[in-house]
Image (cartoon, rainbow, N blue to C red; front, side, top):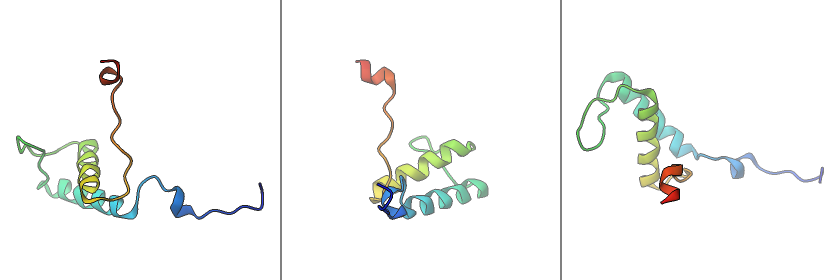
Length: 76
């Protein structure tokens, strides 16, 4: 169907609020003020900082896909 046009925003996987939240957590990590969950250790990993930002965005109700479930948990 070549005549169809769609808006880009409807196909975005992550919303704008999610990327804003991730950017804020990345800045916190750079400053050295970002702390992880229960133990409160300082976050050094870039990937972990992104994961924390996305989970905060999820809790805030932003458009973020659900967490991936590992194959180990699926089998049980």
